[in-house]
Length: 412
Image (cartoon, rainbow, N blue to C red):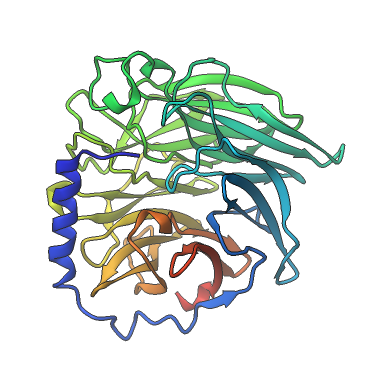
């Protein structure tokens, strides 16, 4: 959740210089086709996540009242968000703009995550899960995802349905104990952050806990998707030379493959940029979107695979100029994906969406909403349901509140 002061200052100044050169909104970048949808969130809500199972849509979010944090979710049915369900609450949660709860659903069973502090250290917290079993109509609440028992950082969860229940990935700091997470720039003190995966079944039982990579970027989100061959995970890798590019790990016959770098940006950066990738899949087609600032300019890129992630084509630049990032990707067909991201527009910050084809054809960008480049605005979300794209983001004008909207895919 940190970035060295020098790197941060460099990127901040770079962004400011580029903003002055940015043109006003072009006629193509209109928002008239983006329709706001009322939702059950209240003031002091934030950290939205969207999950679509193809037939219904789920929105999770967090509300804060003084020191009490509560995780809710709502299901979108019959063109309306339903009454929200309170999943869990606590006064000892770790609330962070980039590392926040996740939701997934599988055959009526709902799985969510939240972060709970395990000690007094700023970055000592655990991943806790809550599972609603649809057959028993009961909750299993507040159980640990990992069993290492260390007072270290665990977070940046992603989860998707699989045959056994859910495939879950996360960043795990068990090997960093001893050096302290604030020393994350060093490989020698306390070890590196790792990437792990496990299966959570329909009863909340955890199995197949596996280390996927023993040295990854400390605070960039993970993302996972399901191909015809099995899960594929995207994350920001980390080399001994501090190259922090995007890598993927595939599962074949339920076993992880070696990591594979996507794009080969060769971005050398001594601190975490807090800007993870997003991956989506439809049958054997895979799309990965990510942010890089190699060369000092923020860029959003996407690459496609048509063989379950074994091989990827050349990266395609998506942003207009000097992007902020905070990317999410969604497949809308086996030949097309949509990607959302944030970038400056004049003196404003906006959320944009764009359609990209496997062939390299790029649609016109559409502005979803104005937003803020501040951390409080978080990471915008998107999900496909039927012939529409849905969006969720945190509005931070006078107080924080979650907004939702929709866009007909035909208008992209």
